[in-house]
Length: 457
Image 1 (cartoon, rainbow, N blue to C red):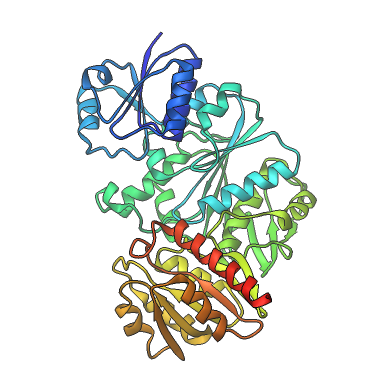
Image 2 (cartoon, rainbow, N blue to C red):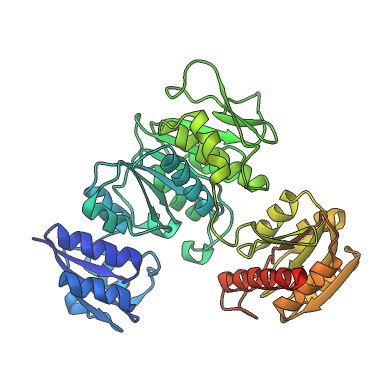
């Protein structure tokens, strides 16, 4: 019986502890912060030892193996001590994969992971598959593996999780995009960040599939340095005659598939006409999810039947109501300029745009052409809107400011005409006026609901 120490007591850490305990290991959980009551109860019920508010090095360094929470940085003193001792450190993903024979679809990328993961899971589940949802969404992968009742798992994987993943071998690996993010964790090197994402491919073989975005220059560049003997399935928004892609769009809502070994001779076409997802980035997300589902054996007919019933995670281009013929969309998750660009580009109607918050050194220049063409009014919702005023004051016909989300919704409704869209897509973090982007999105949705009720009465 080996001793396994779990560093971190969140969903993944507690799940790893429960699985290791169920498999007969001596388990100890250590968290430098406080444990949530729900997790304490699980550990107590299983009889697993734990500590909170401290890391007892004598106990931790006696481990044969350590499962580390992805949120713990390498520079943390406890990790420096562990590395100095030379103890093997793995992720919850690696631990769980040891104890299941199920197939899996691993999905990573800087943007779009959650949407693509949820959609892939939805397509398999709607087709009748026994499928689990795990990683950064759903329940702990390791905890689900204790009972191991699924034939497939769909996993959302961050670069932090992949950093400590060595043996996990997905049946299908999906890489959506690579743009600057978390660079402080990777010595401000885009190459190191890209290679962290590409760790997902390290154990692929000739029976595996790698779905990736051929329009992403960095993926194309960095993938060349990784030798992987697998089935490459690049996708693209538009056909590139000079190279063969496994999926591309022949029209706005028509995806053409040409996946060797999966479909019969000749191509297949999937209609996205009834999908609730909007925007160019969601065309990429849908292409990846549809390809993954198709590789898993879901038919085109099943995919087309399931698409209209998909409900994305909240705060991602989420319709939240209609007032006097104007639709309100909550895109509070758009905390950076790139995400806001996709939202502004994806909505085809005239816009009342609500933006602002904590500026992270944003360069708004890429948004100016879209704002000039589509935005009737900009409502700045932030503690300091000087930069937005400076950039967009001469670009949009009307600019207003408020620090009250209810007032922002009232003004937007007054300015909108039937057929317009009121879009909350802040391009900024939320910490000036809200707890987080979820809080901002929830308050926005509630304000829309309340105003709609008052308008009806």
